View (tube, one colour):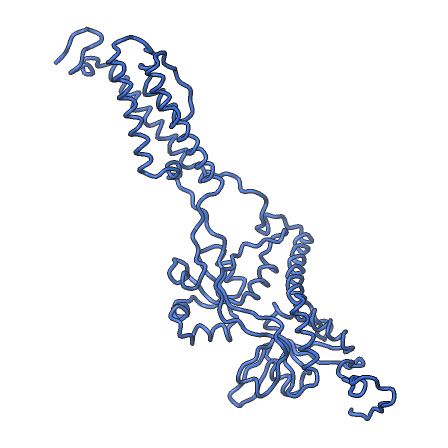
Length: 458
């Protein structure tokens, strides 16, 4: 009730004493706060013993601190229709806007201004700025048997084998020119020795200076080639090739990914539907059916799928349902954003509290306290999930957590086993050739001097 307050002008020493702002002290007056349950990532309430209480969210921290600062008490109630406000065909409103407009609440939270709402209610300085982006799962790792020749390009492989053939020919020419039976062991196993040098194996060293010089000219490049190959193979095993993922909406429509919206609806749905941007128009036309947020993100983790939603929703679901005990989560937040909105407190028109709220919100934003509350709220969500898992005796495997470094699997070394099998096949063919040579020696000696008879067979 309005009342007359006497002010002693003789004792007044400042304008604040002559014109006191009685809105700075509520004297325990109870404020009714309308909260839209549709946006639990901002402010979540729950029903307890027939009444409603604040559970969590950045607006919970803010309202509790503000009411204490201005000496008010408050209670929360879910907004009519559980949203921020929708206008019906008869001109009436529900949600936070309707509650404030029809005096069902003194102010509301988690509401955004627009042209239809401005003539009816007023808005304090924005507290949070949710924006739309798309969320994808972790990049898939590519393993292939081709990794055994990936360290070098085809032209480099050709140059290596060409160099090997060339040095074999030069060694043979040296042997024929000298016509001496020196370094017989080296020349008998020349192909074996020179090839083994490429993989770091030892060999028989020649005695003549010319052969030593020629061998040194081969061993130094072989050392460099071997070192580079081993280092590249180690890199491919330790850091395999990761899938190239889209990072912008334009890259998304050109990629092989599919996409869809969660059930946020409202501004999110209308933005893509009415956009004149051809990329956004294509996204809306080719979207899959709307899904619950948790189903949308699980699909993004398992398949090449992008979930388009508010980043606040993504953080809320990730920390509540998908985050591991150490704080990581499998979602990848992309760089491109669109449709950010100013979200804050909604008041009746000509309210006396707006200026005080604006001043406090401005200082909180400048000091970074609101961002700190957001991060603290998400961390509390993660801890609640982890404590519940411990209470239910759930192991890391039960919740799909990270149980340490990845172990090497068959896919990591598939190329090695292909090479291993190929070596066996080649050895079998050589064995067959050796058996045929022993069984049919004359057939092998055609067009060459037969070692057994000493005759030249034509």
